[in-house]
Amino acid sequence: MKIVRSPRRFAAAAAAAATATAVLLSGCSGAGTPAADSAPTPTATVGTAAAPSPSPTPKPSGADDPALQPFYGQQIVWAACADSPKTPKIDEAQFQCGKLRVPLDYEAPAADAIEIALSRRQAARADQRVGSLVVNPGGPGGSGVGHLQHSALYREGVLRDRFDVVGFDPRGVGDSAPVRCLDDKAQDDWDSSDSRNGTRGSTLAGGCAAGAGKLLPHVGTRDVARDMDVLRAALGEPKLNYLGFSYGTYIGTRYAEQFPDRVGRVVLDGAVDPTTTVFDNTVLQTISFEKSLNAFAADCVERTGCSLGSDPAKAAGKLAAFLDGLKDKPLKTPSGRQLTAWSGWTGTMTALYGDKDNWEYLRSAVAQAMKGNGSQLLALADSYYGREADGSHGNGADAYAAIFCADPMAAPPTEARFQAAKEQLHQQAPLITAHFADEDLFDPDCRSWPYKPTEQLKPLGPTGSSPILVVGSTGDPATPYAWAEKLAGMLTNGTLLTREGEGHTGYGKNACTKDAVDAYLTTGQVPAKGTRCS
Image 1 (cartoon, rainbow, N blue to C red):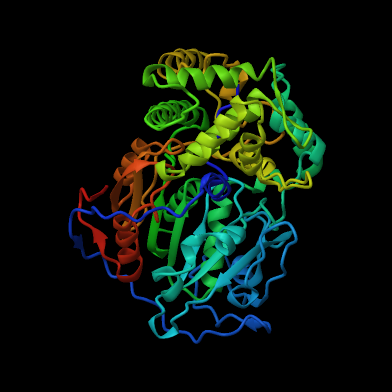
Image 2 (image 1 turned 120 degrees about the horizontal axis):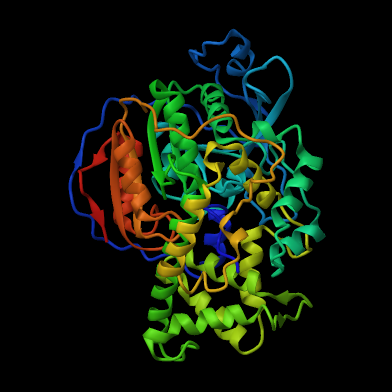
């Protein structure tokens, strides 16, 4: 059986589940309190994307290593973005693209260098410009370039008007020295197979070693955060303004820990606990998805024509039994591909990333599947894995494993912890784990990985005096609310903003949350302690 992997592909999952624009609801309690001083950068004139143009000369970065000065002193050449035939067309006049050179190995910066893919959308109101805002959608494996260019979050409002919003593909992802492990056929088999023969981890590890061995030691989040500081300097910003979602909160946390004096206005939405292992996070995430599955099923039976019946006590079990049954009887689809139990569960969990307004699509997909057509659930699974209509794949799945296995969070559990986790899951997530295979708890499975990280998991270090805003949603299945509470408490100057509601991450889900985040980013004003948006 498949559960959704640890927080990744937020943008694709949310977009696939969404069938309508989320309704903005009011309900924010609590007044804001002033933050520590974080001066805006000077206003810049908005240029056009038609002709290449260099960034302003960067301000001194304060980098200690003279060998890094060529990287910190570089200027980004911005030019028109090339449209991709595999993604929705963008308005080329609205976006610019560029490259950032960074060391492959920060311990040997004079050796090999790689390029980080960038995209920028300049502030619509240059006279009100605050500065640059770097954004990341999560993953690991999510493209920040694609997120910026296709997310509705940046099309209007404060972020559109007052910031040069910059998205980047983290190293190993998208167009930034991508990790490639499996070809398209092998990836299809990987994404849909119900076979539990214990070889999945070694299959991926072998492919990554052959296709990306040189990159594997250098794609961890610590190095991604260091790249982000080079980007900050190249943008001419004395401090980093950042909006990170899901796994993107881990990037932001690692940045604040390494560069506490360069933290500007940082928002971490859908927090990942930086002090626990991927294994332990998977356990808690599975329990959260079980709660969301039950909430979805209970909501469904209140609606006319629900395919799960009318009994709220049995509805979630009926859905789980149907999905489990696909292992023996997969559904054919008009495309000729099959909906397996693995892909059926993946599609279902992908839809649960969205809030209640987006559950309509899942109700439709489940009803269609129960009538014998698995097309909609398979489409949801495809969106999660980044599969295109022509059968090609991005490298999100490969990068997901490579990045997590390079991080200290990859540390495996003891045998005693492993057995205790299985018992906990069978008690608190019985529907998802009814036919659990042991290897399902290792996702990604780093036990046979060709590279073992040398960095050890440790308590979070000082993150600077600048306030950092953490956003947590009470019904978030992918990054449980408890993680947001914990992260806000660990940060040197963390403030927790709570969104009461279902779905992954909070910004843009209601007016209260959006207004509070916008106010912090533009003025430095953090919400009052205990602020809750409903």
